[in-house]
Each structure stands twice: as structure tokens, then as C-alpha cells.
Image (tube, rainbow, N blue to C red; front, side, top):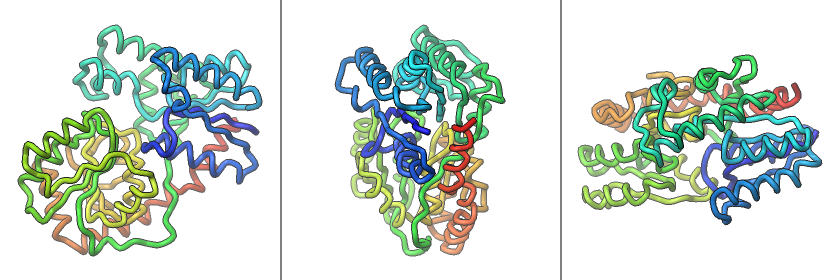
Length: 356
């Protein structure tokens, strides 16, 4: 079997799709499956629309030897990959980790509603075009892989039959050693700097926490300068550090030193960064949204809080920061839970779906 993996981002880019595509490229050959990665980065230098046509040509050329064209999103790489797969007569499989129309609507087209509300409403023509594209691509996929039961419900609401949607949990490579949750220095949050990730609220509550508690945010995205201004405006330069994109291996070093990992997000399909925090012994505070409760069980291997709820966030931080036994309990239980998200399990289940 030969697979062409079509992805929007790939290392050194940071993000779940980049990490996932790299894992597939590294692991599939061990099962005698040949894989090639085609990143949208190869076409990003061209103007908009033209870059998608250029990417389509690249898929057309490289997909000739493949049995399967496996796209990692339903629009930017999904549409050109689907069209190329149809011309080549190749099996087209799609992975969906979020609602592209909603994400672009939030970033570019004035959408204010969170995803669960968005699914039941109509918006401007640009958002609706993106919604039609992602639905068209999903309907024409042989199989759709999603990383959580929550996302399966989202895609079902697009009008896609449930039996076409398969849940395969994401995974992280386990470190060779078990990391203690004791003797750590700071709060860590990692992710794309976009409005629904709630980094602004994390920065604001630092003003109300003891000065010895430090926050490090790692990520890049359109909110970078807004967040940087907020840090300076609140005079938190000594307490909050904003680090732009790092190589993935380097960012993992921060997980080993974080006393607490926080994901204050309004939406998450399945939180890859939380899986990494769990693997590296960082106790987790996450929002009770999307796929987060499929990873974090409240008061067992972390705390679940409401999105952007400053009081709940502060209470959870202060409780974890001062309680060494609780931090270690969360870290130990996270390590037990991590079998559900093992790399071996993910690869075998993915191969089973690809072989259908």
C-alpha cells in the first residue's frame, strides 16, 4: 500500500496536524506501508487561490503512484486533494480535526458564536461557501477519521452518515522516562494564538496571582501582537513570557519543567497538547468543552473548568500550585490514562481504517 499524506502544516510548523502527519510518515513504513507527505507549505508562497491550484497539480503528480490520498483537512488541502483523487481514480480518505468554516469565520468574518451554536445557524456568504466546501469534501470521502467522539457528533450534524465517520484517538510518543510532577517552576500553555484559545484571559488573571507564579505561552498566530500588547499594558513582562514558534522537540522541554499546564479554550477536537502534558508529567487544567473531557477526568487526572471563567481558573491554579501530592496524583493518573492514547494503538487503528 502507498499513501500520499496531504497536510496543511508539517514540522517545523507546530500544531496537531503537523505532529500527526509526521507520526504517520515515520510509523507507517514499519508496517510495510509506503508513505509520502505533501505539505501545503510547498505552495504557500503563491498568491491565494493560485496556491490551491498549484497544490492540486502537486497532488495530481505525486498521487499517481499512491493507492490512497489521505487529506488532513476538508478545505485548504482537502478540496484540491479530492479533485486530484477523482481524476486519478484513487481512494480518498479525510481526517477532520475541526470545523474549518467556523474557525475562519471566527478569525476573519466576524463570527462570535462558539462551535455548538454555530452548527445550528447561518452566516454571511463567505462562511457559507466554506461550509459548503467542507461538506462537499466530507460527503465525497470514502471514510472520515476524527480524533474524538465529540467531533464525530459535529460531522454528523453536517449531514454526514455516522457509519462513514470513524473515531481514532490521537496519540503522542511516550518519553522513555517517567517525569515527576514535583520541583517544577511555571504555568505553561501552548497552542495557536487565535481568539478562542483564551490566552488573553490567562494573561489577565496573572495580575491577580502571587508574583512568584510565572506563565509561559508558546505559540504563533494572528493574536500574537494583541497578546504582547496586553502583557506590556498590564506591566506583566516579568511574570508572563510569550514565546513564538519553537521546534517541536524544544517545546517538549517546557512540558518537563511546567508545574501546571493550562488549556483555556472555547473549542478543541482532541487536545494534542494535553496528551503531551500528560506524557511529560505536567498536571492539567483544561476547559470542559469539545474533546477535552474524553482526555481529562475532573479531579482524577486534572481539573475541568468553564471556558474563560477567571474565578475557576484562579482557584484551580492556586490549589494545584500549593498541593504537591495533588500534582503528583494527577500526573500518575494521566500516565495510566495514556494507554488509551498510545502511538501503537493509534497506528494500528488507522491502518485498519485505511484498509477498509
